[in-house]
Amino acid sequence: MFCGAGLTGLIACLTSGGLRVLTVGPTASVAMTAWTYFGRRTRSRAAAQWG
Image (tube, rainbow, N blue to C red; front, side):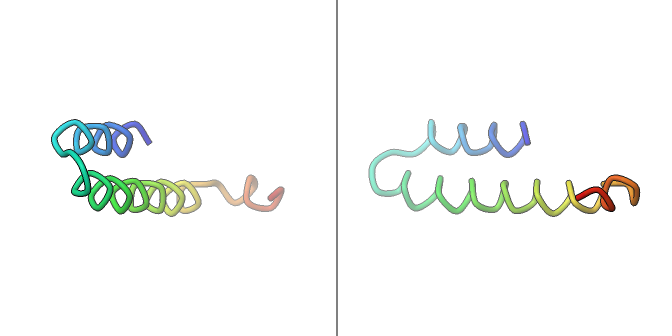
């Protein structure tokens, strides 16, 4: 989660204007998707049973 936030923040600092919108949005979306995917994969079976 922190890596995705850091990467998104770095891209936001390095770009400006319309380019910022075009780069930060997809970067944040990919970071959130990866966080969710790996979070679900690493959950134990007991935790998965409880929702």
